[in-house]
Image (tube, rainbow, N blue to C red; front, side, top):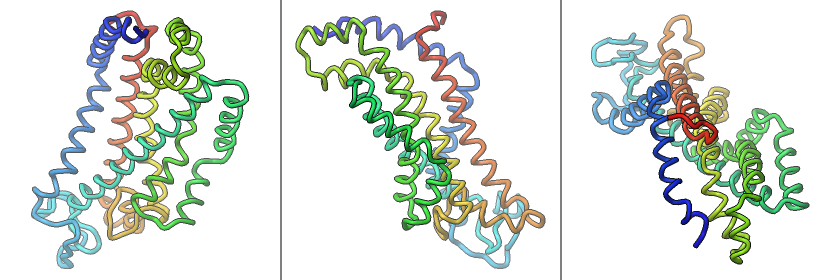
Length: 292
């Protein structure tokens, strides 16, 4: 019988306490509600609008918000800004989510192996992490984006390649603190393999910091995609993203400010909401917090 089986009931109790603490974190609930609303709007919203995101109406160029059926106005080509915003949200949110998944997988793998094995293996892996961290991530991101063909898949991979190091450091520190715990020693006495102990015993007990880091990584990935798309190295028109919408709006800040305000507000809401969720998860999953 493994330690996870023995501690199943306490684990369920801790999960219930964590859920209650998260439910009492008002900003986290607000952030969760906003993310759910954004996702539903981006998935179903374009089907409910009267105009397609690529429909061009030159007679309606630069229409301000609340003009006719253009709830958020139109862009320089007369395309409906609301339709483009929601279609861009699909791209930006998907890039952020999948970049988070890739960076979390890579960072968790490196962190677990480095933290459990230690010695020269752990030192080599963590020095590699330090080497990647020594490069400014923005410059590395721009260099990769400029060298490779920009597409949603490629931008996702590039962001993941520049985001996994922070996850690796967090996981490595957590695993080092867990590898001498009683349940790990019991697993060794039972003859369990190192791989089993790392990924079946230690990793589930280190999921709290990983979940928090993953949530914050989504917010960072959305910002990074917006940054490189704003500079013209990310998602390319006519495929919309919040970043390249800002890029196309910069020359019209004086005459049509809503072209920048709308995607800027969407980025702000998404990033702030994920940060609120991360703060709530961090407080809820803090095992040192004994109160409910």
